[in-house]
Length: 226
Image (cartoon, rainbow, N blue to C red):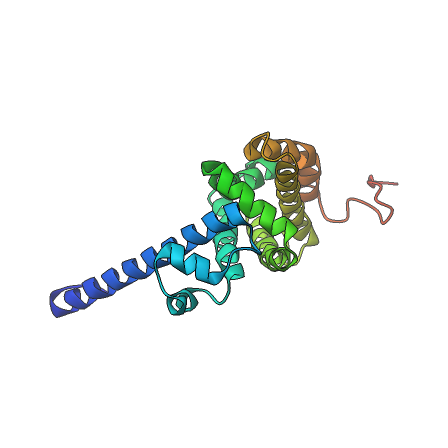
């Protein structure tokens, strides 16, 4: 819709209202993350979040159903950008390179504020409710990545190699994040993720580029005439 005349006034008002809503959401998110990092997830109440953000409890529930949702939304927003990033990679790029760039959505964002990101990662891994919600989202990201791999490499729509490759890429990221948390951030997350992808790169290349059925049921590669 083009905005002109009286319609333009309406558009301007709607735009201002949307910006205001986003500002409130950002304030709540920032306040919650800061409190989670310094007090701990269980010790942080919704009342503490609203007080820090300068809004009412009622306002909080306009944006989030629970304090879990604050973290889930943050992680979820990054996760859904992973497949878009993969889609934008150059055609013909090796699978491991393209997938490493795709999960860079996470590693680059986490690297911007390592203290906050480390707290978020620690909370997610060590809080059962948050870990469960993360795994739900991860399944969605794996499916989205698999669909993009199908499109990039001309695979059949339900080719399990795409799902396996997507899952392996996310496993590499998860392993790097887990190591990062265990080491209390001693090494940068991007470096750990690079190491993880270097280990899985040969498997990703074989998985995507070789024809389906190139291995027998025992896992041994077959050759013509064997």
